[in-house]
Length: 263
Image (cartoon, rainbow, N blue to C red):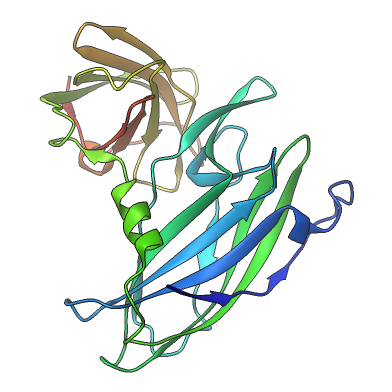
């Protein structure tokens, strides 16, 4: 395994947390070329004890991470995979993310095959302990097609949530009803228990629609999650159920569900 160190800078008005390099460290792992003509890489984030960072849908208390790869060379497209995250209680609100260490796998499509990729970019994310700090990580790593395969990237890909089929999901329905601010959504998922207290996260598939924290309950083989959807511009709106994404987080495993049928 080879790792290219990334430069880290901070943009924050909060001084209480001290130097950020004592809080979070970033490495870029080079995973080499794939048989599909793409290139694998991984972003390894290592957090100090007691600190966490956020998943792509961070919850009401979280800061959504953002990635900008426009400074890269020989890069046409980037596809990111997310290992299954954890749910945290943060001052009475739920946040979704990671603690300790996490590797975020990237599959990179080069503009010109068999040529090295220079991965340059900015990552804006939040790190939280007793205080939350918005941070900016600067990436600059030279990736080569003949780099060896990485066991860390392979393990992170294996840690992704199960698909609906892998988890034994047999049906997913969504019922919508008007609410004071938008729509109330009730999702009913027929699936075996994922273990412990299950958390369901709703992603509407439209960046203009905000989804609240859900309330979940289980009745035998059915998990029911209820939340609220609100459009950024207010008022009535249409929801494309095929674009909706439901993630169920349990103690044993997580499940990634795409789309739902009318209830």
